[in-house]
Length: 364
Image (tube, rainbow, N blue to C red):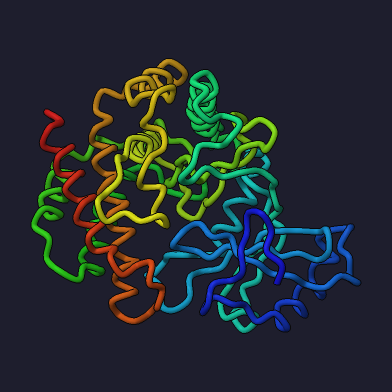
C-alpha cells in the first residue's frame, strides 16, 4: 500500500481484510458519493497517532476518506462504540461543521472483524511533537494559534443543544458525578497493581464533585486537545477540523476546559517516549497562552466561573492515567502485542502523582 505524507504503512497485526472491505465499499459507496471511481484500486494506509481506535486512510484513486474501527482484541464494555460515534457526528456536524461529516456505517463485524465507519477526509496538519514550521518560534503566530484553539472550544460550547437534537445524545444532570465514579470503576477493573496515590486521588475527587443539575449543559467533546485538532496547511493558526469524537456527550463544559489545560501544560514524564508526544506539551514555551490566559479568555467569552477549575484539571490527569492503564491492561493480558505499551505502567504512576499534587496544592 502507498503511504501518504500523513499516513504510513499499516502496522503489523492491524491489517484489514482488503478483499472483503473492497467488496463492501464497492457495493455501498456509490449510493453515498457521486464521484466514486469504480475503476480505481483500493489502497489502505494508517494514520500513526493514537493508542485507542484505529484510523486508516482509504483511497480509490484521488477519492479519499477516513475509516475508523476499534482496536484489535477484546475491549472494555461500552468503549470504542463505532455506531455511536457515527451517529454523534451525524447529529453534530450540521451545527458544528468542524466535526467531520460521516459517510457510511458498517455494523457487520464479518467484513473487517469489527464495526467501522467512514467519514470525510479533511486535508491539514495535526500538531503532535513539533511546532508547525510556518509558526516556528514566531511568538505572534503561537499566540494566534493558542487563541484560535480556545475560541474553537468556546464555539463548540456555544452550540444550542436544546433547539437541536443534540441534547438527546446524553444525560446532562449528574454528568460530572457519573464521570468521576465511572472512571474510578474503570481503574478498579483495569489495574494491574495497587497504587495508593490513585486511591487518594479518587477519594479527593469524589469528596469534591460539584453540584450538577445539568442546567448549563453543552456539547462536551471529552477529549479536546491540540492533537485532536486539524490545522490548515497554508495557515497553521487556523482550525479546520476537530477530530476523535468517540467520548462526546452533553454535560458540564468545564470537563473540556480542564482536559485542555491539562494537556496544554504537561511537562512530560520521565518514561514518555515519542509515541506519547501528546503528554509532552509543546505549548509550554514562550508565545503560547499560559494556563491563566486560557482561563481568562474562556471566562471572558462565555461568562462561566472557572474559580474551581483545578477540580477539572485534577480529574483530567486522573482520567488520562486510567485510559493509559486500560491500554496497559490489554498489553499485560496479551490482548495486544504492541510494544509501544510495555512501559505504560510507569506513565500511569507519573500522571497519578501529578494529579495528586494538583489536588493537594489546590486549596479547595
